[in-house]
Image (cartoon, rainbow, N blue to C red; front, side, top):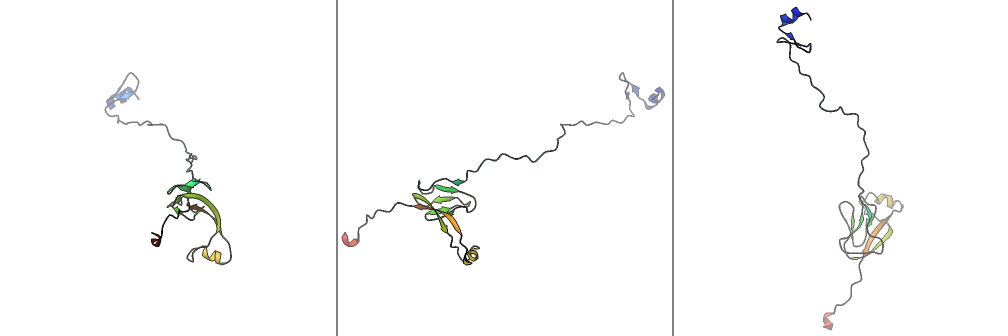
Length: 145
């Protein structure tokens, strides 16, 4: 720019040879606030194991309410004196010894497995039982009292 144009615009060259003046529009520049992010990958997350599986083995003594098997779904089935939680966990309904057995399944008529078994196919499942100690017969009849 020539000096006459600078005077016409009402501006002045400062010591850094940049033009400043009243007719210059003020524009702000924006710098990056942080480093640009690169592409991310779906990294495999390290998950903590849920410790599912048998908690008590065959022949062990269990008290009422103890967990026998932690599972999701029906890998093991509840047998005598064994209850099942919402998530499939098997627990003892009575104190006693744990016994496992592989038994042939006999489903109810409204079960989806009923037709399969009715055709002659055999389905075996692993059941968990709790066998309590035999009760002592320490009662007396009224006639003997």
